[in-house]
Amino acid sequence: MFDKVLIANRGEIAVRIIRACREEGLKAAAVYSDVDRGAPHVLLADEAVRIGTAPSAESYLSVEKLLEAAARAGADAVHPGYGFLAENADFARAVEAAGFVFIGPPAEAIGIMGDKTRARARMIAAGVPVIPGTDPLASESEAIDGGREIGFPVMLKAAAGGGGKGMHVAGDEEELAGVFDRARREARSAFGDGRVFVERFLPRPRHVEIQVLADERRTVDLGERECSIQRRHQKLIEEAPCTAIDDGLRRRMGDVAVRAAEAVDYRGAGTVEFMVEGDDFFFLEMNTRIQVEHPVTEYVTGVDLVREQLRIAAGLPLLSGSEPPAARGHAIECRINAEDPAAGFLPSAGRIERLELPAGPGVRWDGGIRPGSEIGLHYDSLLGKLVVHAANREAAIRRMRAALEGLVIDGVETTIPLHLAVMDEPDYRANDVSIRYLDDHPGLGGSSDPALRDAAIAAAVLLADRTRGAAAPVDGKSSRDGRRGLSAWMSACREW
View 1: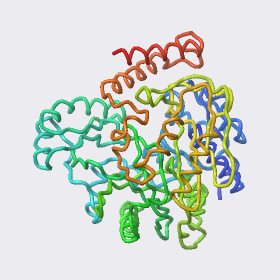
View 2: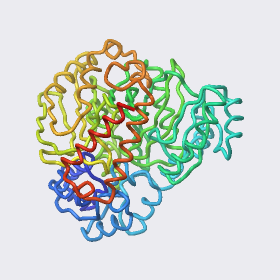
View 3: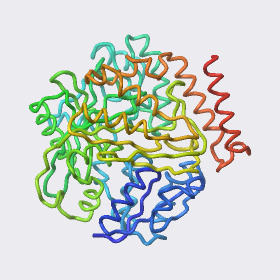
View 4: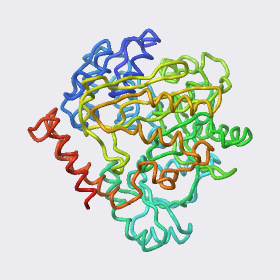
């Protein structure tokens, strides 16, 4: 086992990895940008290294600065967390070339699964069911031909990434032509790669994923997670297990997930994601990292997935050579984001004035904030994850509702009101959900007006551009002035 791990990330996942390192007897070194100087992950680590100014390109996305930080800290290994460079094959190669252990899968596996068209081809060769689709498209006319062949409606997607960026639904040829150039621009901006492709659009599937672990000897699955409740293709609520599938389908999906991982010689923790309609399921993508929603699997299996990552990277056998444990009970996770659901999930900025956390049996908070934390627009809006575990789904919903009522975060808008509304909503309680759940239930708080949502997103992007390059001040003004400016943008969006 190595002795010291550099965590090339921030926020709640950095805190989570530091705690796993402590339990494994390892030292943890954090990195931070100027705006994160007093963040919880910095205070919790054994040491911390400054890596630059607030913009991620100058800090958490700088391979050179991260490797310099690892060398300065005397680290033996680097854990990328999730987001930022976690699924960047070049970063994994650079880490190993610099003499550090990369706590993640081989760079080749990251590269294959990070490119949707390469991943589709590899999965088809391995006998994994995929959604019918095209190769990358060179022109609008090729896209229309692909749509005709597959059959409308179709989904236009970025070839080099996920998270909903560059993703558009087209109901006919005219709609596809109208979004083609926009999708390519979005893909190029988000991933540096403007390639897009078309695949069959599934109207109301469930999003169900399988957690896998792999070492040099074997690959195992640790069951599934239900991740259907999303906004703009970003998950909001996750559960384990998925009570809408039977044991037969569960086994089939687990077997296919293992086959998918083995097809790219995978090592470490990874997630194979599927779209599920009835008894049919289709490969969506593989996330070659620890997932945001990993705690629900940890709750129902008792397996510490981050410690497994550390141990596998050190050459130790996964699960200490034992068989995967059977799932026990039911777990739910709510992502608590600094966003206003009533304004199209517009990001919210400000200072955390008050933080009260729920407690009790089966309640867990994975957070990256503390009172006084400044929440800006430079990074992801996730503040933390509230997770509960109970004997069954009904009991878990009741426990989550009580935990949400006990969670107090003052200073920014959050998704807590939306989560509370979902816990009371009859279709959710009956487990009648799909990835269109929020679109089908606009009264829960998410705006049903696409024009307003687009305006809110545009306003947030514009405000983020205006603050880019600044540390704490916004255009030379205080964070209070920044919040007033954000409110003005929100009002303008509503009027528009």
